[in-house]
Image (cartoon, rainbow, N blue to C red; front, side, top):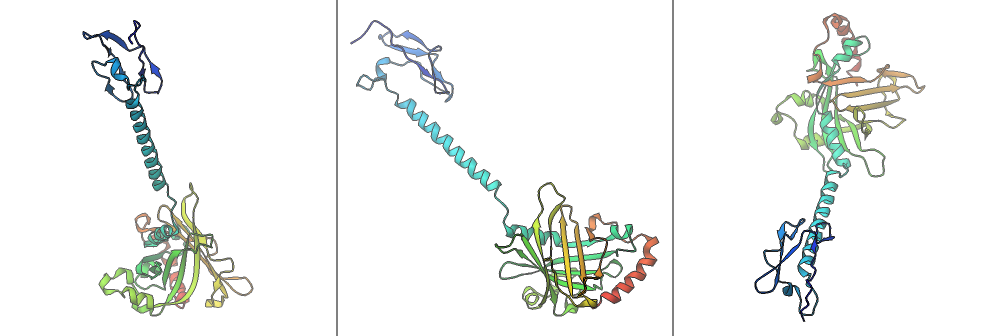
Length: 320
């Protein structure tokens, strides 16, 4: 049954509210009505040039809203998918670094050629101009990375006075640290002299390296530095240190700090049974910088005194 009044239709805005201010009805030739100016701002579609009011009925007298509800559901599904995808991406980007990641970072930071040139130039009577050289040597079955390490005076870098293997691996779950760096003696140091400077096919291979890892000497336990600090990792041996019998010592301790600019600071000290320090730097750690930031050979005015000190030190350290 028709009525003389014009039915009121409302358009749905993008916010979910309805606004009829932009809807204009005009009569068609067949007596039906069309809607002009009606559009959905949120979905970028038009209701069309003509819309018959009777066609909006579902046959039961109710105005059909299935299309609008379908679009609303689709929009909610798309929004939910975007939120889930964004949350997943954020989780991937902010995923915490694992201890194995820390171990790889430490191994990489220790690798390379570093010098104490600048420190020796500032205080040649206390610090020698030393060269550290470290490179990958093997990977253990448990994933630990074995590095070959040698230390020498810059003037005689081809004759290292200290050679070691470092085993760099994640700290056990029960320990409050991220990475442990274990130091091991080498069974035949002559076979490994200048290991890093040789072509890879002229070095002892991985299986040989693992077999030649001898006595465990000490372990330094490192933790990642807090944000905002200059360092990347820092740590030390346990408070009591490790046994050491060289030059009258009974125990030794080590401190290690790795910096963001590639510097490595090492402080090795040894004590006798009475707690007296018997070897190692007294004022502070050695500061080793990468080759690119090193000033090269020691200043000429310091060469004479430094050479005499180095010769004495070589004689004393040869047994270490």
